[in-house]
Image (cartoon, rainbow, N blue to C red):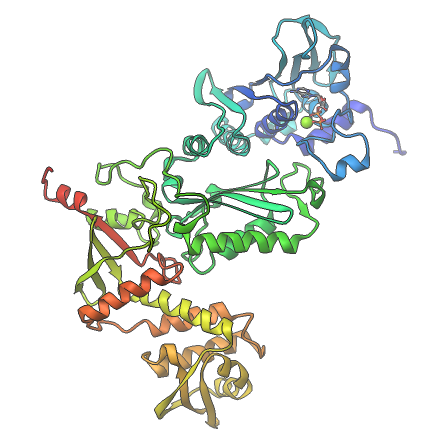
Length: 591
Ligand code: ADP
Ligand code: MG
C-alpha cells in the first residue's frame, strides 16, 4: 500500500479515540465548552449511562448561525489564534477537536442562539456527515445532544462497560467540574430522575453546601478551610484531618486555574505534607484550588488535559507542600476569623446513624468493636474539626485538654473538660510530643546528647558494627555517642537527651538498623524525619508506666503546645472526647 492522505472522516474518528473514549469524556468536553462560553447555568440530561443520550444545555454566549458548520469542523476554534495565546491559556478548550470527534462517532445535534441573534439554528452531524443549518427554537445559549455513542464504530462500542459503570465515570466528571466552578449552577438528570441541582455558590458557606452535596457531609466535618497567597500563586481550599483518611484517593480534588487536574506533582506535594500524620497507605482527603499565572502552566501536555506541566515545578511543589503542612500542624489557627462551621451541620452524636466503617483510621474492622468504642474512634477529636459555633480568634489556647482525673489500663489518661471527658492515648501522645521536639532540636543543629552514667555494651552483627564505625557523623547528629569495641561489639556512651528514658539497647539497635538501610549516606538530613519518627516511636513504648496526676497534667499541657498533636506519627488518633450528652444517652438520661 502506498502512502495516502486519510479521508477527513477517518481522521476525525482517529482523533475521537483520544478525546472520547467513553460517555464521561463526551460530557467533560461539552461542559467545558459551556464553561468557555461563559455559561452561568448548565443542565445535563443523561440516558442509559450516557450511551443512549447526553444532552447539555447552557445559557452561554451561543454560536452565530454562520459559524455552526465551522464549529463542527476539525481544528476550528474561537479560543486561540496564535502560539502566544496557547502560552497564556484562559479557556478549557483550545484544540478545536471535540465537536467533530464526537460527531464522527455518534448522532450529534448542535442547537444554538447567539446573544444578539433573533432566533436559534441547529445542525446535525450523523456519524461524521454534517447537515445543513436549520432554524430552531431555543433561548440564548447552546444545547448539544449526543445520541447513540459509537453506533458506527462497533469495536469502540465493545469497550463500553455496563451502563452503571459508565454512569459512575460520568458522575465523577460532572462532580469534579461542579466543584471546580462554584460560580456556575449545575443540574444532572439520569433516566429522567434528578440527581442534583446546585445553585450558584458565591460565598464560602454556599461552596461548602455544594461540596457536601457532591462529596457527602463527612469530608467537611473533618476539614479545615484555609487560604494562602505568595508572589504569583495562591492556594485555598479544604484539607481533611489525617484521621479522616481514605482507602482510595477518591476525595482528593485538585484544581489549577479552575481546571480539574490529576497531577503527579500536586499529588506528591499533598502526600508529602501528610507524611508524618497519615496512617500507612491511606489517602488524604482535600479540595484544593491553586491559582497561578497561566503563563507558568502548560495544559497542552495531555490529550484529556488532565495532567499539566508547571514551568517552575519546584516552587509550586514547595508552596503547596508547606501550606498544607502548616494547616495540618495548626488547623485551629487558620486565616480568616473563625473556622468555618460545616455547611451541613453534623448530626447530633449518638443519633444512631452509623459512620462509615471503612473510614476508621485504625485499619481494623470495626465490626468486632463494641459500639462505644466505635463511636469514640469515628468521631473527630474535639475543637479541631467539629466547630459548631464560631470561635473567638483572640481567645487563647485553642486546644484545651482539661484536668487529669485518672489513668486507665496503663495506657489512657482521663481528663475532665467542660464538654465532658477527654481520653488520651498517652503513648501515642508522648510519641508525637517527642517527635516534634526532636524535629525542632534537629532543625536547630543536632539532637542534644546526654552522657550515660554507666556506658552500655552491646553485641551486634559485624555489618552493623561497621555502620557504627562508618557513620559516626550521623550518630553524633542524632545525639548518640557510640564507639566500636570489637568485631561485633559497640559501647553506648551517650543518647539523645529527649530519649533518655527509652529502652536504650533497643533504641540503639533500631537506629543502627535504620542507618544500615539508609546505606552509606553520611548525612542524615535526607532521612531525618523517618529516623526521628522511628526513634520517637521506640522511646514511647514504655508500657504500663504509672503516671501521677501531676505528670498527667504536664502531659496534657505539653500536648496543647505541640503541633500535629491530634495524631501520632503513624496517623492514629492521640486523643478523643466523650461529651456529657453522649454519656447521658448511654445512660438513657434525658436533660
Ligand atoms: P474547542 O473547545 O477546542 O475550541 P470544540 O470542538 O470543543 O473545540 O468547539 C469548537 C468551537 O465551537 C468552540 O471554539 C466554540 O467557539 C464553539 N462552541 C462549542 N460549544 C459551544 C457552546 N456550548 N457555546 C458556545 N460556543 C461553543
Ligand atoms: Mg471544546
